[in-house]
Every structure is written in C-alpha cells, then in structure tokens.
Image 1 (tube, one colour):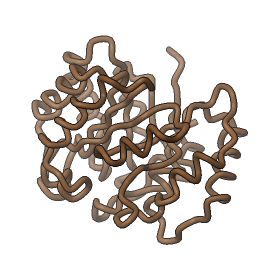
Image 2: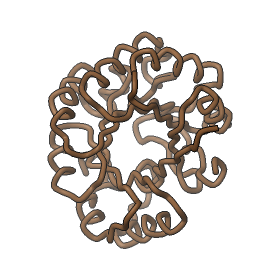
Image 3: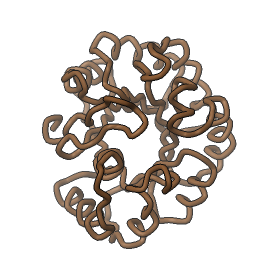
Image 4: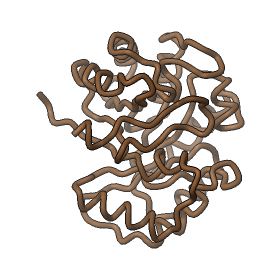
Amino acid sequence: MKEIEIVEVGPRDGLQNETAVLDTPVKIELLNRLADAGAKRIEAVSFAHPGYVPQMADAEAVMAGLIKRAGVSYIGLVMNERGYRRAVDTPVDELNFSVSATDGFNLANLSAKVEDTLAFIEAFAPDVSLPTTATISVVWGCPFDGEVEPERVVEIASRLVAAGIDELALADTIGVANPWAVQGMIDAVSVVTGSVPLRVHFHDTRNTGLANAFAAIESGVRFLDSSVGGLGGCPFAPDATGNIATNDLV
C-alpha cells in the first residue's frame, strides 16, 4: 500500500464550529503541539469574514505569531477575493480554495452562487505562487438541495483542474456518504483529474467516517483530512457533526 498522508484540519475546521473563541496564543500552542505530534500539513486558519466566522477573525495574528518549522506546511482557507488578498499577505505555505457542489450550500457558506465562486478561482488560482488545493463541499449530499449527482461534481472538478490547482479535495460536509458512494464518486471524478491528486474530507455524522476513509484509500486516494479529537462540524450545515478523529484514523 502506498504511504497515506493526513492533513490535520482541527485548528481551522474544528475550532470554527466551537462556541468559544480561543485566544490567539492558545491557537498557536495547538498548532505547535500538533507539529510536535508529527503533523506535516495543518490547515491552520481561515480567511473568512470575521462577522460570519468570528472564531477565525485572528487569522493574520495566528500566522504572524507562529514560529514555523521545517517540514511542516500551514494551510490557509480562502473563499473569495478579499480572503485571498488577506491570505497572500501572511506566511501561509498553501492555499485551499473552497466551492460547493450546490448553489444552496454555496449561498449559505460563501454568499455567492457556484458559478461566481468558480469564476473567482479560475481568475486567481493560475497566478498563485503557493501550492493550491480546491475543496468541493457537500459532494455526497447537501442540507439545502439534497442529493448531488456525480455529473455535477465532475463538471466542477474539471473546471478546477483546468484552472491549474495542485490538489482536489472532495468533502462530505454533512457526513451522509457511505463507502459505495465514496468509491463511485472517486471513480467518476478521477476521469477528469489526470495527474492532480485527490484528497478526501469526511465527517462522522452517521459513524461511517472511518469506513469511508478506508473506501477512499482502496480507491487509490492517498491524502485524507482529519481533526484532532474529532473536532468540527460546519456553522452553515445543520446537524453536521465532527470530522473523523485524527487519533482514530492513525
């Protein structure tokens, strides 16, 4: 079996769903301890509008106060042009663009239609000097628009690959996937990704997160998201629970 790489998303996807807003030094300590524990890629911050996601309002301060170390890559999530411009003024090592598979979720999460977000990514991703990921949210089901057809995801994936992204992530944002659906979606999307590697992001709403992760690995995926202690959810996805726990996935 090929080596599997875990992307630790707890500091971003985990903390953004917590009621309490942690102080900046506490976030920096968490990032340092995750690196001490062996995490090599960490989604550290989101450059979301602080009014919508106050837990991430100090993204610049977190990155400024973090003493980066060799061999650890820190990822910043960007969702629009304003977030992009904030991110590139910080020492993040990678950018993760976000777009949804449905207009319903994209409007709730990004205040834009899918086409508008794709146009933003297509305009800015080609000029990014950092490694870039594009994450497609609600790939296996949307809390607003219901089931998502694989053809829709393939269409979006094809445009993202054409925009020059370095990695494509498929996210089960509300945790409704099952292993058979995971393998079917990966098979469909792989037709258009070419040499661009796939990454997967599962939530454990129905206690199928680890089974879905194993199904993805069996389908050839080498990059998986997880969150320390299973932290997570989504402030814009009702009833979504935490990510699969890093300690369980390892």
